[in-house]
Length: 609
Ligand code: F6R
Image (tube, rainbow, N blue to C red; front, top):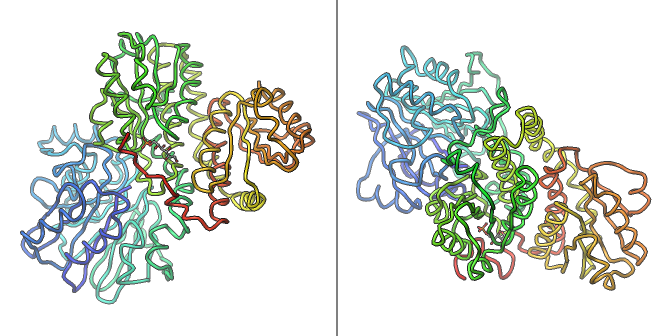
């Protein structure tokens, strides 16, 4: 989830690249860089931190050119640093590239290229591509791109500049978005439309497996196999702010819809389907340490804490190890009981939440082995934990967390299966079945998102309501807590999440004629129990929306409206079940005209106690 920009034309390239990067800074901001052809060589400038640092560097050390590429980075492989920032080059600077995506087989390619004498300077997967292109080059850059793309596995959007063809830029797309902007005497490359809107509104959206060759006079698109592609020109009529949100009205809605691709990224490179294996060796956990785990503490705040509640169930079911999920602000003062074989898992999207960080430090002080699940490479949590699982969800701009949460859940599934694999708690056939189910989740989320309109009508019914209940059992209860938090934080409608069986021990008196209740039933073994709780609230006049994993006549009879999510393994329903709740929260807030992305009294990263 970084930003790419490229330019060839008659203007001074550097301001064009910097303007484009400024428009993309919301996509990544831990470092930025540009590479240009200055008529003699490829000249590179890069700087860690915000774009302003790169701008200051260029002021001190200016460069002039009419062709170049630029990048703003959100780290995945390798910490944010000068050396890891893009553009990357081969040793002789014959090629310079910027890259979005992940090269799954980069370690294997790195070994092969190192054996041939190529010297690597960064920790990134991207650097492999520049050396690979140099290695593949014989007669033309297109030929090198063809050969290199055959070797690369994973996702890649590339802008390529080469001294061999200094009057051309190449844009290469596979499983990561890339567009080409068409001008008069100038052409552009960008990962997102806002980067080039200032200069042109004529755009070609590249498809997977296509390469665009840009000259000052025009653009030619070919497939990786070399066949010419007839492209449709798209006229963009969005303003810049709409374009930044990918055409969505708010970042939150964009991020809700990004979940299928975010989840696919979380899975990337972590599954060996042929061998029915989870591949998380980069956690760096010793097999014996995993085998010796006797108890697990999961510690987090807010939405991340809710992910931890589901994580507890999954870890306990698969490993039969006791797990407790704790709110970080409580844990840090609770003098937790940590033994030599306690694993502490901290979960934090930002990796900077003060309470979570303090809990991590307390756990480490007591000698715990700490595994962090985070979205931000190089964050404090990532740096201080012993082991890190990166969710690779890309930057989350909206304050209300959506894609960070679902990718955290997926992280828990992968980690639980990985531990089960190392501990021999599951056979490879069982792991294979779980893997097959995991791989379907992104498509299932996509399928649910297609029904977004049903949730607009449901949200309309909430407009006049001041109170709502979410009920569910087992993992459904955890998902209800998250659904309730989402609704409260952006729509300001009060809601409560209840373990369905607990309502009658407490606030059932608050259910009256027309009180909306969202009931979640995705656990077959608990279906009848929750159904009877639905009947309890119906008897008091509640209006019940049931979200379930299968259509039952009894459920249709007992509830007022139903929404069915696709069937999967019961442990994995949490990801799909939360999508309707995110949409309900979003549309309820939107109908009330709230500033959805910046709800009142809430910050994206809570770095104070
Ligand atoms: C809610 C939300 C917060 C965060 C919480 C922890 O939508 O975003 O509840 O989940 O502040 O933040 P991180 O995950 O950055 O530690």
